[in-house]
Amino acid sequence: MAKDISTTFEFLIDKKSFSFDKAFFVYNTDGEKVMYVDIPAFRLIKRLDFFADETKFEQLFSVVQDKILSVTSSEYTLFRNEKPLAKFRADLADNLLKRKIQILYPSGDPLCALAEKSAVGGFLGDLSGASFVFQSGDDILGTFGASESLEGMYHLGLSSGPEQKLAKWVALGAAIILFARLV
Image 1 (cartoon, rainbow, N blue to C red):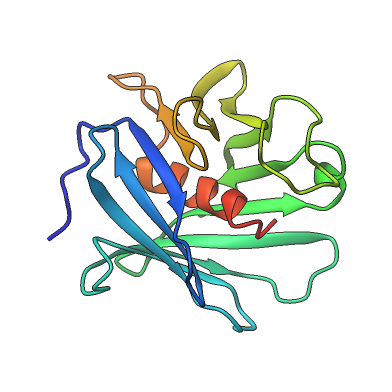
Image 2: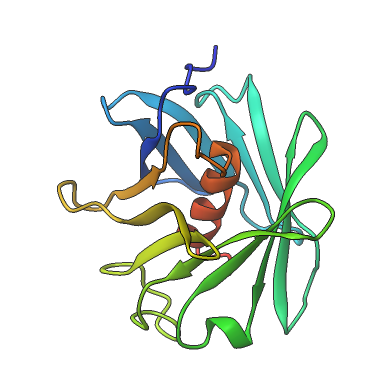
C-alpha cells in the first residue's frame, strides 16, 4: 500500500545501485521509502513507472516519452490513472548551457519550469553541484539539487500551504527525468 505523502513537501531521491534497469528510490525526510521508480532499459520509447514499492504491485503514475528520435527536443507526458496530468518539454537549444524542463498543463499551456540556477552542467550533463528551481513567473514553487547532508542523494523541496501550486507527482516526474539524464 502506498505511503501517505499528503503532508510531505520534501523528498530525497537516490539511484538504486547494481540494477540492470535504471531505478530510483524516493524517501520522505524521515528516511522511509515512499516510492520506487523503474525505467526499463532497452526501450525505444522511454518510460518511467512510479510504484508504491519495489514489488511493482501498486502503480502510482507513469511518465511516457512522446517523441521518438527528435533531434530538437525531448517530450514526455505524465499519466495518473491513465489521465494526462502534465507534459514535460526540454528543447536542445535551451539545454546547451543551462538545463531546463518546461512543465506544461495537458492542454500545452505553461505551468512552470524546472531550470538550473547557473550554467554548471549543460554540456557536461553532470548534476553534482547543480541546483535547480521550479519557477512560475517570479514565484519559486520548489527546489531540486544534490543533498548537502547525504552524499549521492538529491533533495526535492516544494512550497507548502495554500500557495502550493505544483503537484507532487509533477515535481517528482520532472526531477527524475532530470536525474535519470533523459533530457
